[in-house]
Length: 547
Image (cartoon, rainbow, N blue to C red):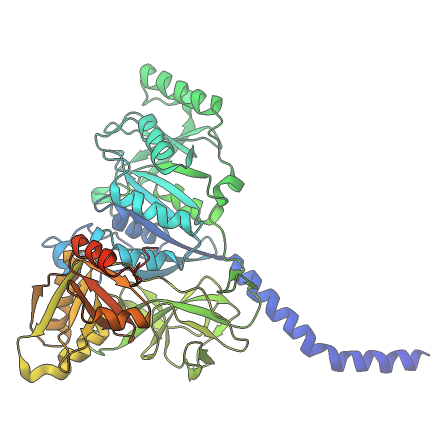
């Protein structure tokens, strides 16, 4: 009997290892996903988003000294702004992906353009995050771009942390800012830290969780972590009786209205934990970075296009949310940024492109830190992998290792500006055509060709600066100077094949094809749209969805 049990045990030991290994691998994937925090920072231009990004790297120990906010003579460039045009103008006009570790967690920070002309790039990035930090200027509060970005976060059910920035400068009263957030955005603010002193006379904050007062000391140019001194609020020697009384009254008011941190309502998108500080002087930066680890959700099972959830532990899958060429001009390469949704990505593994059903090896996979990158061997759900020179990939494409999956597409956005573009150097037509294709694939502009035997390309954009970036990159990366001339078209619509045939001979409309070959209709003006709809009621026209 003992011998039989031994044989059974031996059989079990021969059969169990593979099953045990599978379970162990799945446990590792789930455990690694739990360590990930993938988020974006959204804001109106000049609210301090890029500065906050830089200071996160400082507090995470990734850089020894913070760079300047803007590229001024004699100062270092900010880590996340890598394009020469960004460094010249001191603004963020592309999204970047930065991965670093903090408190044993892997942080994937997807920095986004602040300028409204590049809001489409921001929208695409928001498809790849699990949370967002909304940065508000204490002097300006809620601004138009903030509202627009919040609508996208709300549509995607992305939890939002709020950081009231620039509180070291004169600004609005803190209670007024809270009211703006609740009335204009619809989120109930639940302050976690509360300022001591008015905007412009910022002494420090009270951490409402502990009740302790944290006093900050400035460092030269904010290049190093701010020194902190913690004490009981009532025992602080640097606070006048009037400021102490006002702070205590405000804290009592918050308690009375129930504006307390509630993680469940935050994750449900009903409340927003709020922090106050100054990214430039490093006041309050560590609080908001800690909140990313403590409050922001880890990656979870993601819904596919059919609404079915794909488990984190299933084999590798992901989707492309950004494509960027020539991040390294010396190599003139092309990087597709892939958000890992399930499984374990391993460099060299063969993955399948869902759209074409073609398989390819992932030999050149990178982890990104601004414009610097290094080879990545393994990645887990929540991570972003840069696939180098994966030329057939487009924004929104799904990838998988073993079991097929199709993730929801990332919608294109209706452009507002339409211009003809021609090369000033006819001898460089091949480079011109290649540049057009690359800019279209990246989403820098949308590119359309008419149906004439010799196509006359039209580029379209949300804002004028997209055209400037397009022109800048064509001359710098493809050595092709271009001429951009406005067209008479102002609206874009979709239609069915039968109506498209009719529209080719209708005044006020122009039938074109995008770079994927999809047929699109350009309309001269709202007047011509109304005319077509009244004169040709059988023609079916639908707007291009915004988000």
